[in-house]
Length: 315
Image (cartoon, rainbow, N blue to C red; front, side):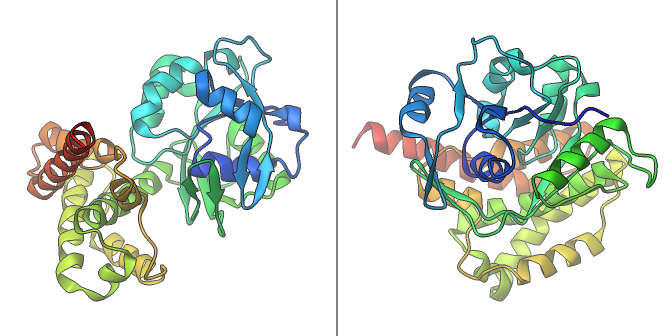
């Protein structure tokens, strides 16, 4: 089994930076490549990026630059940047490259697989990371854990790709798990994000609101129940027990903490509503499931994004 040594990352945002800084503790600098072009790439080359108070100077490669293929390629961009990122990563993919996406949602792997082949991908989802990027500075206390694997991962019968990534995460001390049913794990995280990310953005609510305000919690649960109805049609079969489990997760979060979508709204940035409510509405149409709550959340958040653009243009 060949070891993973060379890693390429596209997207040096909150999560990409956190994982890159952890890998930098165990890998030579030249083994961690950041894919970035234009002014962003030049800024990374000249200024580096501040992560937890330290400046990191990673090797930055323009997307057009020819290079040795990566053993591991990590997509860590925002969803609205994914189509461009897929094109920009082409020179980093070889016969044995393993690709993972740490994007939210349940659609990024298929999008990447359409270009490079699903046989190169492992499904993955992040839990518990609290990384936040402000300008050129990233800060985090908890790196959390990455769940990854093939669609199904019978204990004792992992694929070679899974074994290689297990070995790598062990070496660089990134916590991980390999769920038996990876698709269900992906949908479980999707269920959480559809509920709390979107409702927190609309209500401008930190986690404490969902811990103590029943009306806010009820809207969140209603959005989640639409996902559960769709999951039954899609063969995933989430249930009310999953909502109860997620409420327990939310109850343990810092009351003053904020979802990434709320942070985007507060910063007047484009959100990831397309991969949450947008996906729910699209799947609802596909499976004949009514999704009025997610349609409402989608419309409100989209209106806010357009409002920000209008206000900036007329300031």
